[in-house]
Length: 375
Ligand SMILES: CC1=C(CCC(=O)O)c2cc3nc(cc4[nH]c(cc5[nH]c(cc1n2)c(C)c5CCC(=O)O)c(CCC(=O)O)c4C)C(CCC(=O)O)=C3C
Ligand SMILES: [Fe+2]
Image 1 (tube, rainbow, N blue to C red):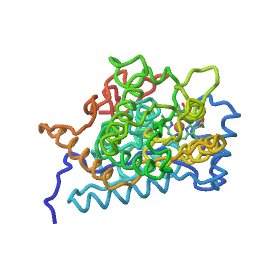
Image 2 (cartoon, protein in one colour):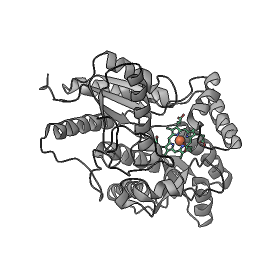
Image 3 (cartoon, helix red, strand yellow):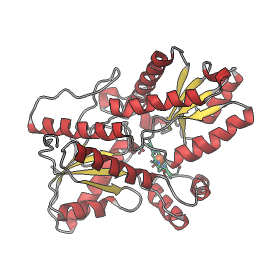
């Protein structure tokens, strides 16, 4: 048995995710949960509902989180890290509030949160912190003693997140026909968000020009493209593009869209495209529908060979990265000196979101940050 690893002061890890429907009857209530008060046009909702119905009303995200839970527990047990792992979602069962209530009743006092979103943005970070504040407010009203909650830093540039994606792109390139492989263009894709949300993503001093959201994705894309060049000897052209646009048409969102990009690259003579969904931690519905279904069909119409590279999912290297992130943060909280692990040019992200990080359109309490109303 390896020596025990010390997660002190933390006594539990909470995997915090989006949630998704698990059958046809769940789809509409799930979409209502997601879009409550967010001004999404009815037409768009109908359309997205169809994406889920096409897959039997089942989102892949819950099984992927179950697989990640297994991978984390296996990694922790194998390395002597004794910390229980719980799971709660924003939009579907198991709901965050219920999970947190169980954790508090089990006696957990210092909880560390791993969100299934690797980058800074309102949707990927502050909104989860708002969900935590809402859950704490509910437990407080129920008379429970509140735990202290911290959130792990953004892990977009952790080697355990980047390296599986490098392998994924290499595998997609290898899978292309020989005569188009070397000319293949890599389209790194992520969730489009309103340009106003991108510009204000991350800490205030980095606002403007796409903010931390775009900068972080560009850094990951460059890391992967550089690694691919080193390992194949081929300098594949690449671009960061966007997918899964929502919201009203008159509001500007990050562009270009992956489908437009595929058409434009095809017109420019590119012989093949690898779509690398670096913005997603696992094969969410956005990956299965927007890339594997819609964009793949668009490319087929054009006669353009495309491949979609793997997301990180439950890769053991990602589970190991989470273990390292827990130990790193625990050591920091104990006052030990640690060198945080990060690739690329941006360095390790902050541990605690500062005031003004990824602000909401309408300010609401958010936990696990410098502006948290909870200790
Ligand atoms: C940045 C980002 C991530 C990545 C970070 C992360 O992973 O958290 C993400 C993840 C996800 N988004 C998801 C699903 C949806 N997102 C929606 C709507 C929206 N997403 C947004 C942004 C993001 N979303 C935004 C700005 C909106 C507009 C409304 C709003 O401002 O809130 C809608 C409403 C319909 C639509 O318009 O698409 C749905 C159904 C699922 C589950 C998928 C599954 O079932 O596998 C996951 C993991
Ligand atoms: Fe979303």
